[in-house]
Image (cartoon, rainbow, N blue to C red; front, side, top):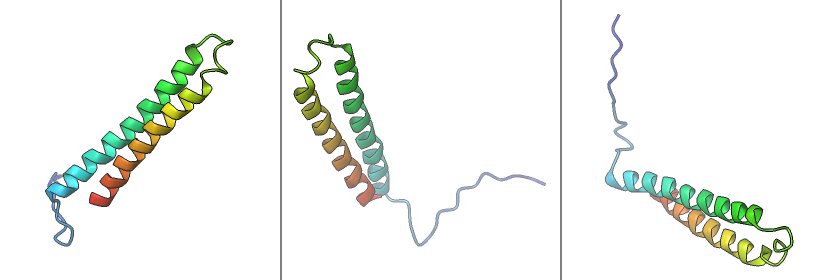
Length: 81
């Protein structure tokens, strides 16, 4: 018995270049969202406890912007894929 590793594409759903770009956009969008959330959280944790309260609003805005951009890129990738 032989195992064959053959990729057979579905003729109803061909693998096109737009699907490749969609997959890449999903990966990049998720990376943007995760990196932005991690950057804001690690910056907040690295601050002195006396400065944390004053820097909460700018860090929240930073995380929100990164998450919004990342989710928008991911949504575009899902739409293409």
